[in-house]
Image (tube, rainbow, N blue to C red):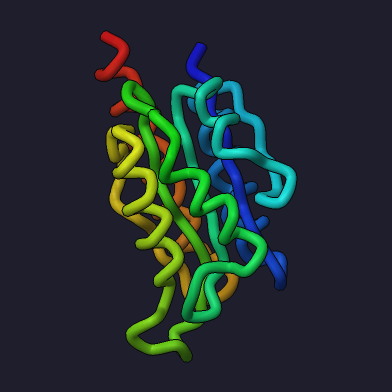
Length: 150
């Protein structure tokens, strides 16, 4: 059975909702999932997972409590793992909307892990359409992980 680790950072609860939706979708696909708040996680924890997911919130920059995690993540070697990044932001930030999603995606790419799905960016709380996007995101991650392990 594939294992996934979903790490999230949240202020308003929106990103915990994003993480919960992804966790539920992965579990529905037969994946064993651990969901952990970012301050309680260590990037080395991803070594125990097949699928690595990060859900950072965004205020037009990296979440403050996620800076150490972000910096440590870039020193990990995660070849053979599949990753995805999805997060909630606010379009109020204009060009900086969900910049943390892209930064964490770039950091995961540097680890040698394989991108399993396109980044998902959600404005504020996830709605019905966002839930469908997150379900599809989870399915793509599982499919990519299955291909890698063939």
